[in-house]
Length: 208
Image: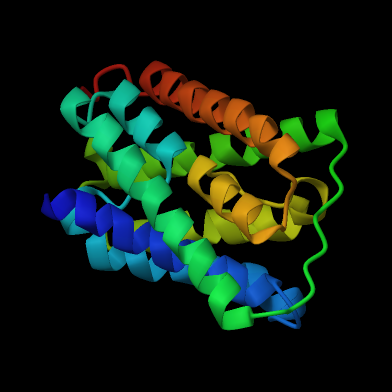
């Protein structure tokens, strides 16, 4: 149970930070820095308990890589989505009547952008937080948080910069993205996570 609560807390604060820095006046151009930092600190806080996934695509990748029990996959994803849902409702309460303009996505560029940076994110997670060669390192949270920051700065204006199905649910509830776009995130994020697991296993054949 501790693992699932940790996944809930980490995802909650990640999505809360996204909403509070983007909705209304927010943090402007500094939003990606705040978002990446929120993920970083939550990973350092909860990584030793749950692995610090806070993202269903990461959970998929870690499971395919062989470092997450199958019995934990659904509870992890459920905890992450529940955390995102409550965070989105909290943002709506805190921000009140703040104006929200949904991002206008162009399907193929958005799909590709989400796929690329979800692949990068899960690839970094697997190599810094689950590999034998980096076991016991102290930088994994920084590396993972900065990957999200880089992605948000790079393609946030193309796809919204979710790289995370739970975040996609959260931004849909907040009105930052239309519900009709949700499939783009689900397809791209899970495909990116799965391919990253395959790439890790191909490049690290002895890292069981």
